[in-house]
Amino acid sequence: MDRLVAAWKQERPDLDVSPLQVLSRVSRLSRHLERARRASFAEHGLESWEFDVLTALRRSGEPYELSPGALLRATLVTSGTMTNRIDRLAATGLVTRHPDPEDRRGVLVRLTPSGLERVDAAFTGLLRREQELLATLGKHEQQALSGLLRTLLVPFDASDSGA
Image (cartoon, rainbow, N blue to C red; front, side, top):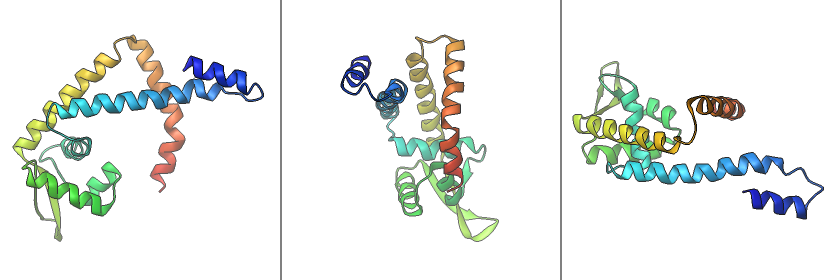
């Protein structure tokens, strides 16, 4: 990244290329993190999208169930995509569907014992891997970085919640 920024400074001294020093690094880090996460999920036989749905259910607390609409909001995918994902997870025995006692037309999606075991193992593995990735930073540096990234994300998160 330093060479890239230096080259742009030389080629375009009329421009302030300082955003590259931050955002290009964030972008590059994002690609590395996505690869590490995919590898961590694969160790537990999961795809990233499966982990997203299963963790949304797991975070909901016992009995680890949500409506498809709640899963949509938690994972930010379309209705058709969520239906496909639920179908695929049900086919592998990680979730079940059952009628919603509060809404005769509705259904609830629930983690199976196998799904609960798998998502807990995958989450534990993910945290272990992410702790390794952050090992070069001390606790205070991690907290400072987290705060700075939170500040940077606020306008994005605000526009997402209004959509």
